Each structure stands twice: as C-alpha cells, then as structure tokens.
Amino acid sequence: MTRYGIDVSKYQGNIDWNKVKNSGKAEFVILRAGIGNEKDIKFEEYYAGCQANSIPVGAYWYSKAVSETQAKQEAQKFLQVIAGKQFAYPLYFDIELNQQFALGKVKCSAIAEAFLNVLESAGYFAGIYASKSHLESYLSEQVRSRYAVWVAHYGVKQTSYSGQSGMWQYSDSGVIPGIPDNHVDLDICYLDYPGIIRNAGKNGFCKPEEIQKETIKITAEKDGKIFSGTLTEQ
Image (cartoon, rainbow, N blue to C red; front, side, top):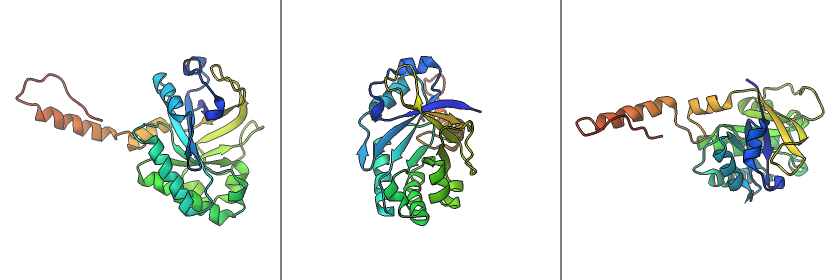
C-alpha cells in the first residue's frame, strides 16, 4: 500500500489545510513537534488543521542531543508536547547534525536508542529519520532493524538504502496547493501504519479488542435500566 504525503515545520508558514486536503497530494502529514528542547510554534495549529480536514498525521522531533541524558530529556519534552493527541503515523527521532555524527556510530546509536526507548515505554510507535548515508554510516544495524525507518534520499528514482524502511523522503522542493513555501518535503509511505498502529493500540489509540470489551462491560452495567443501544469509551 503506497501513500504520498508531506512533512512540515514552522518554516512552511500559514497553511490552508483545506486546500492541502483537496489537492489530493497529501494523504498524510508528518509534523515537526519540536527541536532540541523547544516546541515548534506551528505544531498545535498544524495538528488542528489536519484534524479538521481528516488528514492522518505523525510527528518528529529534530534532535540536538549529544548524550543519552539529553536524548531522554528531549524525548520527555516530545511526550509533553503531544500529550492527549492521536497519531496514525509513527513518532520519529530526527538526527542530522554534524556535531552528533562527529561522536561516531556507537554514540549516535546509543543516543537514538535512549530517545526511542522513552517513546516506546510511553506506548508510542517509534521510528528514526535520517539521510541514507547517515543511516548507513552512523546508526547501528540493531537500531535500524529495531525501529521504523524514514529515509531521506533525493535525486533518485528509487532509494538504494539497503535496510528495512517504511517511508522515503524523496524531495525537499515539492509544491503543494495551500502551502506558500515552494520547498515542501515530499514523502512516500509503503506500510499501512494507520492500521498497524491502531491494531497495536499505540499512539493514543485503543486496541480493537479493548474497545469491544469496554462496550460489552458498559452495556451489561446498563441491563435492567432504561437504556437503548450500546455505549463505548475509547
């Protein structure tokens, strides 16, 4: 199942999400939730716009961490920013700074794992974003095979990244109606993340069987009283 989407941050400015939806060019959106220890100033606005137009979303955090401790702090900030929201696509750790790669593969891998473990422990479907060359040179096979991978690789008809990946960022210069900036990142997703995440009960969703159990329980509690239909809490 192939879906086409975009990823955005505050640099895309004031977005008309209705036009984005009607363009048919963004079946999903990955939102930047923050950078370092700061929330992206457009995150709430963008999330609300996507929700209002029924555009499924994921999110990413642009990391500045150069230690496991800093990575965990960033991940906790990420969790604070996204609290109470649902995401049909993964939550990604974005690593792309030279000062991080200067630490070497072992350290970069440890930083990534520290961040991603915090997300997973909180019930989120976690992934990692980086360029093809950085993934192959600075992230261990264990990390790249353990988490969802979103690979950036431009100027090619098909990425030659050899590892497993569910999403490919193939351009940083897309044009999408409703977005004033003519340099929007374009993505292709190959996996049914919405189905996978909902079925697993991740990212703010309940597992289908949990919803069913709750429906049955509430209905039983209402027996013998004036009540018609079923009541479900999610």
